[in-house]
Image (cartoon, rainbow, N blue to C red; front, side):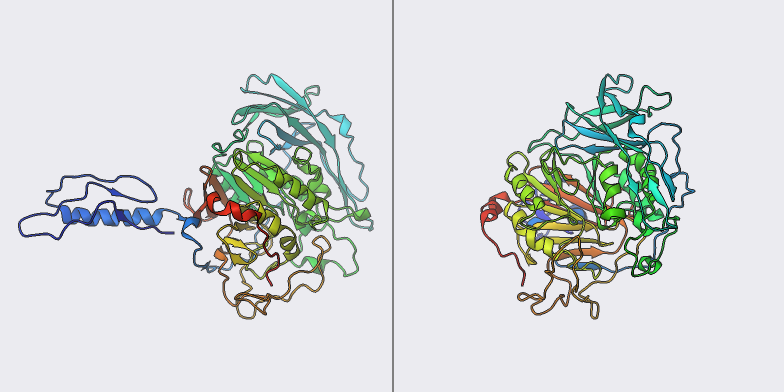
Length: 582
């Protein structure tokens, strides 16, 4: 995290009797590139001033973030300072999660990105959900889906219409409560100007009291190598606890222009249909129970709480394992598919599980860890086509996001999605992936540049931020600690497919399933709730900061400049590399 002080001229000569050595004309901090002082050489206080200069420079250099240009950093583990235990849920009596809308007035308003900065989605819900043994879905045609928008709050001169839907979560067991949602609306706004603030209100103007208040959001900057969003917040595994509120408050105070949410959103599947959570979820059900309950109102609570952020800051979401939510007829992901708008059609994927979009000079690919990612599957074929169309002279940065990490050193979920890594890492490496963001593991971890478990200056930096604040325990145990290496999964997860996490056959962990120390690829790890902020500065430099919830505004627990070196790596991205770290 430090730097070094360097005088731009030679050190002054040794002092002689009756004279003072000349002071160099200026001193410069190499990383910051600023001049700090220029004084006459005959100043009698030269020695004291020089000492002060050295001390000031040392402090300033130490405050300068580290950089990937200096090569891989030594692994750092910040030990847990307290037993955090379970997070505490916001109760349904909390005013932040209660329904405030009346009649057909919109609630749970959210803005999402489309594939290009000239379009965006606005989503909301009207009407009340129903819970019970028998539920009757609302008619989506009851209320229109209209957004009025413009460049001033008192001049909403443009109008767009969209679609509405209702979804249900149903169980074939007596005594369980079914659910049907309010009416969910998605409207796409097109023909927008990049980097422009738009005001809007949504609802049905034909019905009394059915239009929202006026909200505002800013579109992404124009696609190009010299324009970037100011700040991109990255968060995973949020849930709806008091720790969640700390994370979201801190994130909002950092004024992001875009939010990436990396799955495990509401944790509705941790609750029985009577709204009661279970610390030991599997213990609440018999082994023969084919479908686990899920308390869908937690989704509505989450949407209401998040509206203060999502109505003004665009957010993109990718699915996590807690969004699976099985129900009758082998149906899954009903809430996830229905509640969010995705740039799937615009990016050619036609799937809510994987898609892409541009934000200034960044091309994002959001991948599905719980959809088929095999090399013969639709997701892989889509990814090949999508990456082939990326012009790095237009969008220099390639950033990916998905839920379950490929590189984690925590015991929880260790090498759980190895099959996904084996299937996709080579393809992403060959196209020069710069950064991969993930969640799932409830802690923070940042890697050095890595490919196939090997330090590689042209590999991606993998950052896991599954520490958003959910109800489940914080991950605190590392797989490399004595006695904590998990057993390889005997049975693959049905949504992940295959079994690929065998023992390593080469490298420092040869013959073992786990490393016996923090691996070289793991640069920094810490068990604390928090979020991250990415600031892409130009075509080659991006500043990453991870903020613990207890950090003060503007400070960070971990920060580093991630630097692209296209002159060094582009020629390697067409080479064939091994895909198995064995």
